[in-house]
Structure formats: C-alpha cells, structure tokens
Image 1 (tube, rainbow, N blue to C red):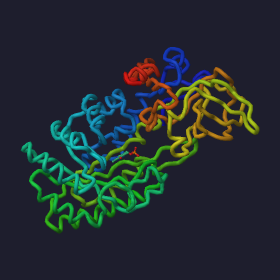
Image 2 (image 1 turned 45 degrees about the vertical axis):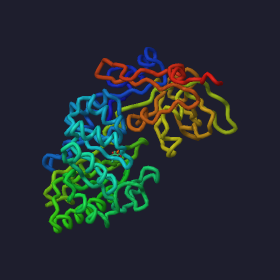
Image 3 (image 1 turned 120 degrees about the horizontal axis):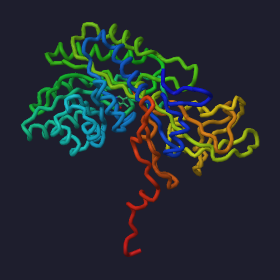
Image 4 (image 1 turned 90 degrees about the vertical axis):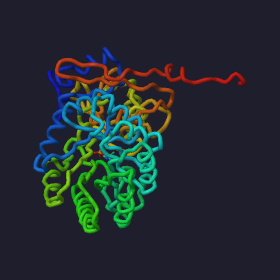
Length: 418
Ligand SMILES: *Cc1c(COP(=O)(O)O)cnc(C)c1O
C-alpha cells in the first residue's frame, strides 16, 4: 500500500498534488512519501515481532538519500552499507554506529579503517582474505572487529540474473562447504570477534522457497560450527523481498516472510538480523516526468518523456517494468512506446504499452521508483542529476537539489598543454 493516489481527477503524493511539485521543482523529479516509508518500515517490523528482538538494517544502496535514511533511523532501523560513502551517509543520518552492518566484496583498506574507527556493529566478511586484512588492522588498533561470515549457499533465487547473489558462481560470500574451516581460522585471530553468519541470495524475490532453502542451509552451518566448539550468536538473513511493480503482481507479504523465518529459525538461539531495501523503499517513491513530444511510429506512437535511462536505469539494465500513469488521466487509452531522450535504443521504458492517452506537456509518473532509482543515476548524454523531494502530509521539501550539467562540467579541466 502506498500514498500516491487520485483525488479529484489528479494524482497526489499524500496531500500534495504532483502537478504542484512539477511546477515548483521542475521535472524529472523523484518524489518520496514519508508516510509510505513509515508504513512499510512498520509492517516489516511487525511481521518480525514473533522473532524476539531482531536487528533491522535498511539496505542503504536501495535509497541512500539522507532524508530517507533519517526516516528509517526514526523507525529504529540501522543501516546495511556497502561502501565508505554509504557508511558516512548512515552516520550523517544519525544512525548509531553499532547499528551499522558493512557488506560488500571489495571493501578497501581505508573503508575497513573507517568502519573500525566509527565502531560499527558488524563487518560482513565476504572472504577469508578480507577477514585476515581486517584482523591485522583491528589488532594494530587494539580492537576486536565484530564480524559475521557471509556464505554463498548455492541457491538460485529465481530472480533476474544480474541481481542473483547466492549461486555458487556469484562473487558473494564464501562457498558454504568451505565456511566451517574459514570460520574456525578467522575465529582464532585476536583482531576478530567472529559472532555469526550471513546470507543474502538476491533481490526482487517473488517466491519464499529459495530464501527458505538458503536459511535451512544456514541453520545447518550454525549447528556444525557449534559442534566444532565455535561461537555463533548472530545470523544475518539479508534482504531480497520483492515488491509489485505491475498492478496485479502478487508478492509474498512481510507477514508470510516472518512466519517462514520463524519456522525455519526455531531453536537457532541467535539474534536474527535483516537487511531489507526494496520492500521498504520501492513503492514509497515515483519518478515524475513530463511528456516532451508524441511522435508517430510505424506501429505505435512514441511517447517521449523528459526522464531517461540515466535517471531511472532499471528498465535499460534489467528490462524492468514500471507502471506509467498520467497525473491528470484523460480517460482515453492509447498504445505507445514510452522512451526517453537519450541516444540509445536502450533508453526505452516500455514498448507497445496500453496507457492513458497523453499529449505533449502532460505530466506522468513511473511508479515504484523509490528503490534503485535515483541512486543508480548517471550523467550520460550530459544530463544532470534529477532533484528528489519528500512529501509529508500537505507539505514537501526538496531533499536533493537538482545537479545541473554545468555543475558537472565545472569539475572538468582542459590541461594547459592542450
Ligand atoms: C542489496 C542488498 C540488500 C538489499 O536487498 P533488497 O532486495 O533491496 O532487500 C541486502 N543485503 C545485501 C548484502 C545487499 O547487497
């Protein structure tokens, strides 16, 4: 459920007409609904209450905007970060360092040091090599770094290949068969406090079965680690719950997910940890755009909008679907190809889509753009970075300024010898 709805024939974000935001901030612009973020955070939290006191870390990469992180912090979420930049954002948003989990296969030395200096709650180690490097850095500082070992359970998440992370040939985690030996060796290092295991098999999962298989394997691993006399007090189950992108899509609910987790993890005797991203932010944001022109096509017309693949990359990257809705529905229908202005055929949001009739100058939205939207933007074709707005009831604020192409050019230099 979200708070983008029609009222008196036009689309609103909570109590603010999107047309007002377009007039005052310009387009394209991302619009987030605070009430929707909060609702999703609470539904997720409530679904997990049978699990005791789980640790919740919002996956910052889904939407790293500081205002969004602040909403999550106020809801009691920590952060799952995958870079020094994300760590800085989580701290800047007021998340306590001990609620930060640091994931990622390529953490560099300076990033490990920043995590140690900040006193983050957990490093999710993705290789033995990383653990050895962190142990040396921590010991030199007289610290013991709290760590979980991320394992690759070799489970097919059944989602898009590019966002599957738990198959044996993916780069993430250590092979689950090697995990007991690696965990034992890392546990013997004085710079590390090996306290648990972690798994994250992919994103936009539409089926709980692969998650259940991965968690069962993790449970088996915990038992065998303990049988070897090793300490396991935490189990991080990652993120991955899918969201409906298309009206009518049915996804597993947080409640069904919570019930499955409760069943599988019964008797584990650990503190469970979660890293949801998309399920919190996805439907809490839209990309507001304007129709530049409608161009005749051989078959269907091309609706050319002012948003492009540099602003919302998912359709070009993964062939993803985003519902397209007119801000002031005309009650006429048309079949159209929806494209951006970028000089790439990949800059296509939809082909042969049945949509509300739109004309040049009309406003429209791409739905479900709150996760993996603005954060994946680039400046391709010398376009700027779009602004981001957060709505709260009948007010809104610009939470990220539009960055103009000339501001990007200002960071470039032509050397004197040219
Ligand atoms: C991306 C990611 C998440 C969040 O995934 P969602 O599908 O957005 O819930 C959680 N944990 C890790 C390690 C990730 O890389």
